[in-house]
Image (cartoon, rainbow, N blue to C red; front, side, top):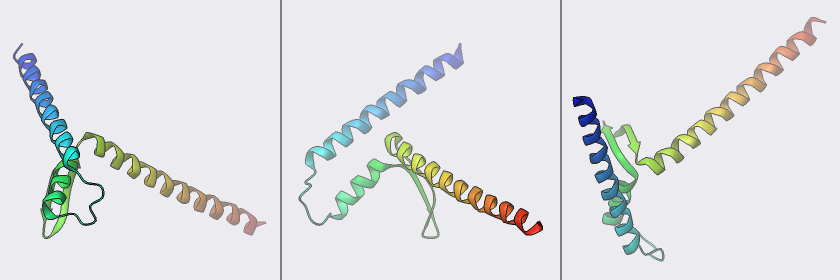
Length: 106
């Protein structure tokens, strides 16, 4: 019973955070000027705060990060596509090596 209550509380917190996030996105978009040629530091900071849920920097390099949900999906979809392309190239190279190996024996 206690686990159910705790789970419900976590869900409520996530809903509140999600609502707050969507409000911040909407507020940013209302004030955004697409015709602006140069972005000021404050605008860059707002954009980064809307993209990244968490970011850890160590020794002036990004150590780890996570995006908010919509951007997380796009990032990992692209990563999967890149990995798939690498696997396809690897398989093509292996097929060429195995085929050429057979022709050398004959």
